[in-house]
Amino acid sequence: MVKALVGLLALVTLACGAPPPQAPPVGGPDAGEAGDAGDDGGAPDAGPLDAGAVDGGALAGDAGPPDAGAPNPLRFDVPPLTWAFVPLPETRCANGSTTGVGVNLNPASNEVLVYFVGGGACWNLATCGVGTSANVRRGYGAAEFAADGVKGWAMFSRQEPRNPFRELSLVVVPYCTADVHAGTQVKTYDGLLTVHHLGARNVDALLPRLVATFPSARRLVLVGSSAGGFGAQLNAPKFVAAFPAARVDVLADSAQLVNPAGPRLAEWVAAWGVQVPAACAGCANDFPRFLDHLLATYPGARFGLLASMQDTTLTPFFNYGLDVLGFATATSGVLARYDGTTNGTYFARTSPRHTWLEFVTRVSGNDDTATFDWVQGFLRGDLDRRRP
Image: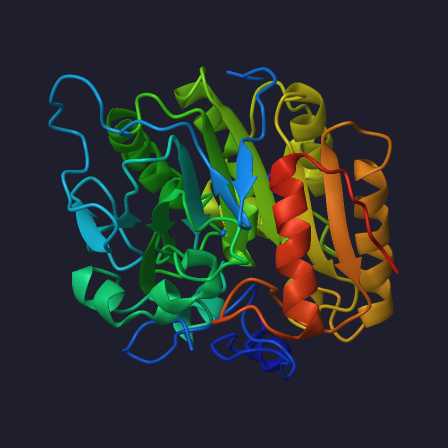
């Protein structure tokens, strides 16, 4: 599904570690190897489910603790309503070190936000060797999470009245595998550099812990920005299978499933060991077909997209070089696949901006207010499709 020249990296290596507007991109969706303080500045159809009550701009789940029932050693045993980093020994970062997840649990909610962090990608010696993806060399553990500014973003604030996620339990999936959370293999490039592209395997290790922690979850919302947005979409089938009694909705920020130009998709698939669902024929060489698969296979879920038509980070990442118009045309084709469905929607804008949720520390200004209001409507079930 997710299906070098160093000269190309001048286009493809723009760090996304500061708020937009952005200069031309770095090594792929989102940040490159940022500073040591963290890379802040991504069984079918669970059936219909009410969107939940919206009170004061927040989505409220049914009352009741997410960890009800007999004690389970897999459950996240952390204080409520505060951030904690939980190590997961089965996981691996690109350098072979272990990682974990950040959690902030609300015992009063049966709804869960799972956020896939972005941060670039790499797929050969050139892209991996120069650090075009976050945390490839140093990994990501408790110290990195403690220093990471992600916890200060508006989408994780329980005090921000316009934040539609403020009452949910929050789970942050760090990014340190350089494979848009979709890899399944360890790859040695040119006999010189070994990279553990195990993002999908990390999700496999996380899921039993989530099931144990949220046995009565009624909805999970998978959200991701840039590389994390691709991860949220590509891993959605696993979450649906793990939570058959819950609805799983997906919101991808700056992660439109366009086909890359040239052989780039085949390079990604080969480097990361991406595994295509058996039911998704042809998805290994046709990215938009995977979107069609999600929309058709999971009619009880909602799939949303925040996108910029002239995204100056994704354009070179998808091998369009400086051809922003070509990338915009490809994005328009992806938007058309949502049209006519009963569970797909988007908010696309004429803009070079990359990511609309990352790095936003408060909801202010026309762009950010419009974004968060649209997201709130998405969670209610609105099919408010907006495009230039």
